[in-house]
Image 1: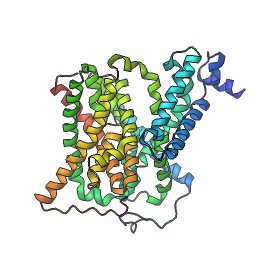
Image 2: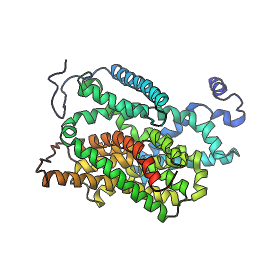
Image 3: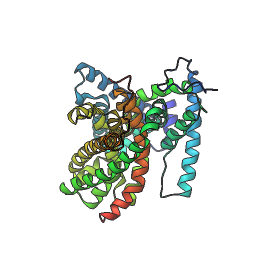
Length: 259
Length: 151
């Protein structure tokens, strides 16, 4: 009974089998189920990177939604919005307190911030500019359209900043959102391997700044696992790179004739 | 209040605040940040500042200026951070709603995104290494990093 009441409150005209999924219960259940399955697989296969719980959860979740939408004869995007999004949004909201929680590891390494603030600031500004040139070059090399290129540029910023900038420089906000999400998933899955391959270990400050820039909040959580310096540097990078991107990308886009 | 709480790595031996009080502090900071974010959005629509970014800065400043003690926000914060992988699952699944965009430029986009991620990580990390090298070799600065928990 309560199911139908909630469903009625959320979307009044849902009928048939879909009504059973149009409440937050399903989205929350699916999210935790696929993530736990990912954790179990990750353990079972001794931490094989493709079984990273976040990656498994994302892929399995999408597969489940696609199959269910097919079975109900619906468009996947529409099924996602009615069946998954209500629950997904509730979990998503908790990224807010989780993100501001990074103030604590940052505060705990205030010694590093006070000592290296100039290097941190310069690295992020110069690093952002260099990265933009390289990303622009790669996008050209792969023959992306101007819309595609413009969508790639703001991805180092946190999603809420990257999306409006993407639109402002002529990109597609949905593509930029995908980039920001994949950044995080990639860093969480491949971060350990990348740190090893590029021999970043010897320099905790650079590693932290890089992980925060490329992997956003999720990258910061990964950095924190490497050590307190890496974690605090990633946290500061998330904030500063977002503001740098906010200012630099429109200038860069004008420079290369986009937007 | 917390004048003597200056230990760098803050291995606080003090007792954590009750969990509901900690949640209350996070909720307060987030609400204030949201108000600021709305104000900024109305005043400078071209310069978006999202709530969690403002919140991170506010909480950091509150800790640095000893308005909030670290043991009031520490254990709940660590718990939330430990959940981040899970909290990000809905964002990943969100891509199910936009699978259509892959049809336009196909998997080229995904490859460019993978390469861009690596570029951002490596370029920023090496740039930082360069600036720290400059600090040591040009300005003879000290670049020792006290890291007691390197894994």
